[in-house]
Length: 371
Length: 253
Image (cartoon, rainbow over all chains, first blue to last red; front, side, top):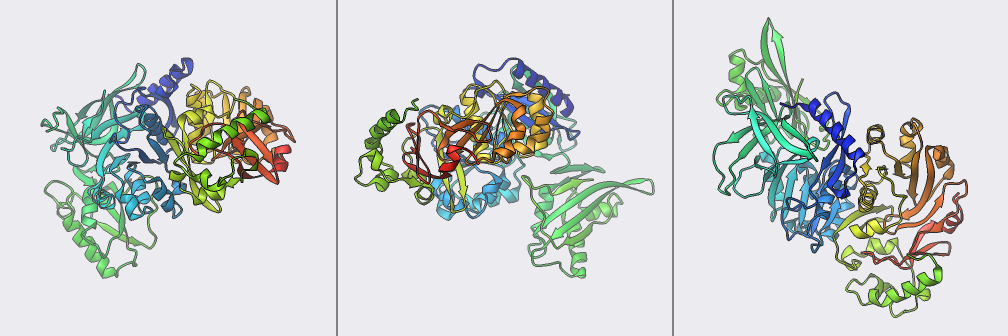
């Protein structure tokens, strides 16, 4: 099983190979910088086929596409794929930077009239807020990547881009791109077929079949990641897809971000999103800190929930009530709520505080934090 | 491509009828019945801000669309990949490093490198990480701008040997701020450029550099530079009045 450090070593070797022997066709290689485990960046070479293996826009009739991805290199990689597409297809790509996302964008997007959008759901959502209705209605394909698509975000994007077919692409920059694709039309959200040349396994599955996702795929020339533990949790779906694909996997989330395993319970961001949505007047946003603490020699789970309400902090009595109701509603295992796990002495009582300031959002919304 | 003014003028004159008869009407509207290149009225950035891209798209090609921000307004500038590659940006090296403040220009210049057949390193915003990556990739040239160049100061000062070239791309230069980097490369070039025109002129770094037009570019001087290019760009550049003062072209301040 390869870990992040092994990928860093492989990436460095691939980069040396690129330096020693530049490719005959430049657009088959890309120099990427990604984050390492120790905080030191990994600089690596990744490869592309000169013939784009899958259509960049997700729809061959799309002529104008927005790319809404945080890093410049990732935007560049998508433009290179567009460039490699059929010669007779005049696909135009407009990459959007964070600095562009304000009211100046509205007439520009109306001028460009995108037919496809591709990128991080959070950025696509922010860009959509600066599109007029007719521009949004002109979007036929939304290709979402870079973060787990929550039910809440899925519904919001579908409402925002009414005429768009949503496609999910599961990628990892440190292995050079695509791992899974949901475009066949038969899969539910967060379910994927492996991308071209990708093999997947799930290691150490729990009772629900959820375990570490392992990825095998080429990175650059002869350099491959083999059974690389990518850091995401997934489970295999044991049924042939109606599209004919043999392998399907369901992505549960990022270990430690969307999905935290602690004291035998599963803290899932999606479940927290669901429960927060049951308090529409009291919760506009949240962050949850999850930790394992030792009390009298016993390990216990602790969840500290920080809530934000645009209309101001509720009364102390109401905050207590929210804490009680939240613990009653949120499931941390298939059958047990937090309140029940508190009763069983597995978790400490839920801590709830309110903040006056909205939470800052970077490229990705990280709502669960393991400390 | 030519640099001789008479030959360029002749070539531009020959382009006029094609532009006037195209479905896009930017120039049709601007020029009216005028057919003599020397008497054509100039267009400017304010025209690009006012007129949508669909009315100034003179060819269909796979392309990059950039956003250009200006205090007067923002606009789109579309460039086919082939046209990006044909621009005279920098000396070609094996491992170029593109580190520019403007993200749209950065991506475009990285694409320019690809079009020259080389794999660039495209620096992200963080200068420390960009410098670290540049060391790892053993870059041999740099394309920067006057704002981004000083951010790489510590990386450049620690170089074991000078880069082959540094190209500084901008619409204005304070050479006093660039001269301290002269020893960091065997050649330091200044490229006078606008996002919507591409490179216009270039010069070797000096206290008072002498700019020469890039190939295929005719530069006329009034109070500011008026630029025409013979390249068949998505939005061709013909009698384009820039805001670049003529004094700069004669020698950077």
